[in-house]
Amino acid sequence: MSAEARFKELNLELPPAPKAMGLYRPLLIVDNLAYLSGHGPLLPDGTLTTGRLGDDLDLDGGYQAARQTGLAMVATLRSQLGSLDRIARLVKTLGLVLSTPDFGDQPAVINGFSELMRDLFGEENGVAARSALGTSALPGGIAVEIEAIFELNPES
Image 1 (cartoon, rainbow, N blue to C red):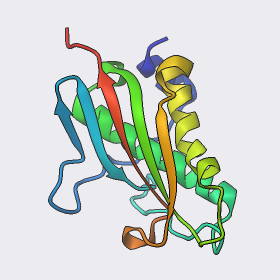
Image 2 (image 1 turned 180 degrees about the vertical axis):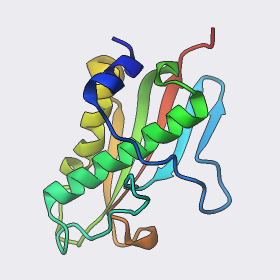
Image 3 (image 1 turned 135 degrees about the vertical axis):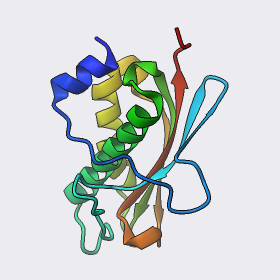
Image 4 (image 1 turned 90 degrees about the vertical axis):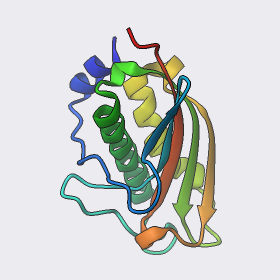
């Protein structure tokens, strides 16, 4: 099943594709790789999920923030590439979680993103190499920031 067909089947609601908030490109293509800059948990109404894991945000809230970050990335991919079917596979993910020093479940938080990618691109092409790290600060107090690299199918 194609990624666009899975997208429709999953009945996903995307936020607007995020705009650059500095001097960078949200997506840059080099050869057959699409590099996505750090995205945050942008909601359909344009607000962002904020909070610190281990303080004012629980594990499920962090998981949902990571999933929402994935939806923001999907919005960027669709707006820049025209179709999710241009994606061959997810290659690498770096997830940053705003968390207290004693919070150690960053991988479980970033699973919100990873499970969405698996559901959308399939078990083989949606599961990538990954790092999940805690950090003491993120822009605007967002709960999660994720960047990713996708391999592209050759254009027909």
